[in-house]
Image (cartoon, rainbow, N blue to C red; front, side):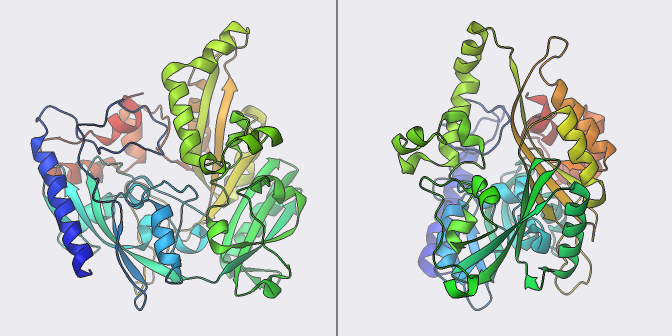
Length: 467
């Protein structure tokens, strides 16, 4: 670590530990930060949480080894800005700017490089973690704290908080050229995913980024991206910009080829929170022109949703207008590619939300080992291609339904299709089922070692019990 940055980092860790020691033993431990990308209920006040104000930056970047030391609450927006300046980027960059590196590792993250590089925690080389007993330990794959290293992903702060992470980086080019390939049949789409994951190419061109959108069972697209050094190599004369009046997800249907700067590609979904900004009128042309560009960001929309969850203004309007109440259905699930078409058809028939996002992924092969590492709290199978299916919105609650019924139906369908569900949003499992899915034996063993007095809220209580 570079001298000045290292000194400031050490001071920030000391401040963090001091704030931990000041917390009464009966007070819940949490980070004092104003933003979150979780959709689970959160306490209103963060003023007495752990002091992470000094843990928001990049400590150092080593261009020769392609690694970076990064503080735990550094956002990907800040991290990417620093690494692109060195011609590098993290192996996986989650699509929303204010996701933090520590959050993506403890809570999982995904993006269009995940079919090559897995999930963000798989590019972590070592972590300094504030454990539940107040100590900071360095966890590595083969060291004394390897149990914590492998249990940390999907633990959501219930085992500790990452204060420093060393991660691998990859080289980038200035531009990303994309192709939007339409499929009229979901089976054909999943067959294409299998082929691309095996060869990392399509039609003779390399594929370095892969995601997709389903607008309906007979209209789905895979977006294939590759780095290019200049515009002539992309076949186009100018780049597109989706931070202004153009909207990225609509462009998928409107053009078969596109090119963006690498930075704009990485944040292509953030301006409109995929397609969810339409709920705030931002996709109306007049509304978009009136809404300042600096506020067309996912974190702004997330705060608006938080205000609605707290004050229920739109729910009251719906009630006054005689409209039925609505259930929030905000989930990401991983389905084995062989079962993905069936799950998508079921989802369209039973839930009916459109569009949905697709992001293929595979566990990353461990360098020098020859086999993929496994992560006990989110046990995906090595060499299995999965498709992340993301759907975010609300559905009306019918007269014979209760709030939560659709989410529970989805949980059952995910299990029936041999899938897994991320825990950043609502979950309804009972405790036995929950820990059977999410590595309970390993979790409890690691919890006893690093949080013997249960200072940190348990994983089940965080993900389910506080609904």
